[in-house]
Image (cartoon, rainbow, N blue to C red; front, top):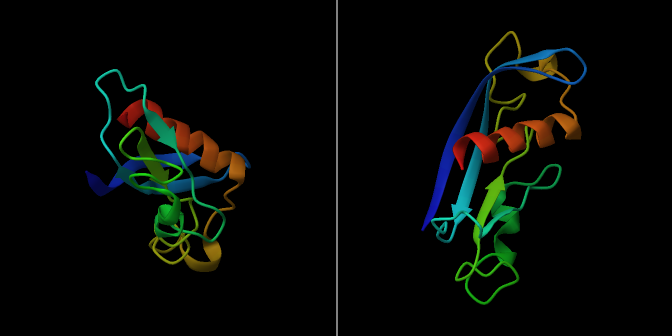
Length: 117
């Protein structure tokens, strides 16, 4: 099963003290999650990349074999799919988008894993 979903984070306080209002992480899953959840792998996107850029490694017989693994690919904040300058409403979009660090992405992706899966 492959599905693209949106995980709503709400208002998130960032590492630099700023706030990202109504934050969301868009993610895609590949494969089937085992009942014990022991086959889950988080495979984050790179800066500027989206979940589609990771798909060449995901699938039956590939490095991330979906016959064995359940792969979760979260899109980074700021990549145009998850909350980003291009899709956040004023006054927080565009040039006013809060500074988001790699650490912020890791913290919020951890929330995705622990709260959703």
